[in-house]
Length: 279
Image: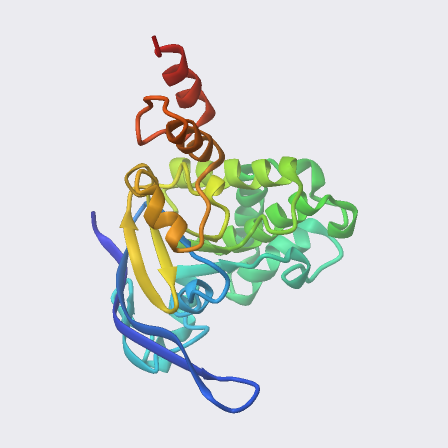
């Protein structure tokens, strides 16, 4: 696969409240591939959000290199171009919604790019349609559910037509229905539009359908691979302070009680099928 973002030996430190230097990233090397859905996970404080903020130059390396579609984050002249390539969506949509009308909010990003009005209208129409938000075009974002507001925030980034969208804990404040709506739409955008997607989450149920996942701990990458491959390593996952997806956790518990089940179960459907095959 072709690389969109290349990270080489990235180190980043910040100052704690007491003035001491804290290493958030410690020599991280990784890639984000074009067209994939990549999950970056780990406990709070593992460094995943700090890493992702380098993808669109919200942060610049203390040392090391970050190259986004051929552009170095270290060169300040590239910042505007990099932020057009990589869009960020944060966990609280209220922090990204700037207008009292949905369509105006979605138009905010394209307007800041200085695009012609006809192009702005075209992009807003496309973004709203892509996320099934057309019925809410003239509504106030404040009248929407939290899940719908998060979709409006995603639409605002989508209207800028980035090559990559980074979602930082996008379902943290959502109920199960809202979580499902957001994740299904993210998967559909990746599938239908080919938008590279990076999902930051500590919820293992959310990474099941990702192409690849990276597990971080204390500023280091500990494991990387396909979810099915990594979740088969249950003891290593648990040693990093993480849970298994619900179906994998249940299968793991049943195996401890003596049932013979495959080690790569990820979904309830797979678990049911495996149980039905038992003698």
